[in-house]
Image (tube, rainbow, N blue to C red; front, top):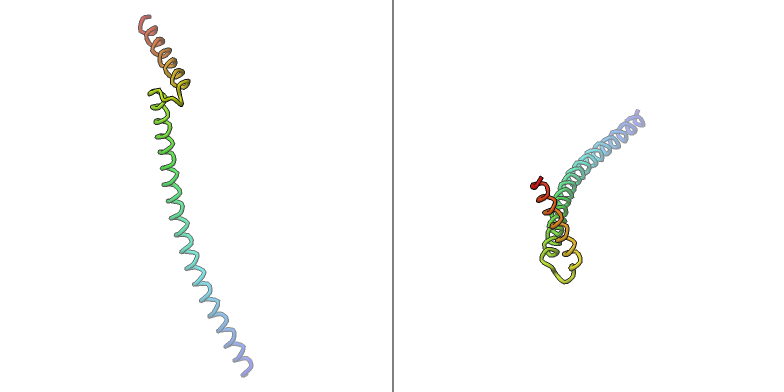
Amino acid sequence: MSVIAEIIDTLENKIGKLFIKIKSLEQNNHELNTELQNAAVLIQNQSNEIESLKTQIETLKIANTLLGSDDNKRDTKLKINSIIREIDYCIAQLSD
């Protein structure tokens, strides 16, 4: 009987250790899920900020083009010609 008692004690110890390990892994899993959610929110915020900055860059490029910076003289001329064509088209529509 003492052999069976020792086996049962060993088995109980191993089961206890397994429960402790399971609790530890569940806690770790919960922490990792929380960290993952925080990272997802951070990525979304950064993506929104990137899109906003891209829009600002485009706006600044257009403003520089319209102001006639030395780097973009050709673009400036093309943009002005495009605007003139649009105005001519609008005038033609109003004349009809």
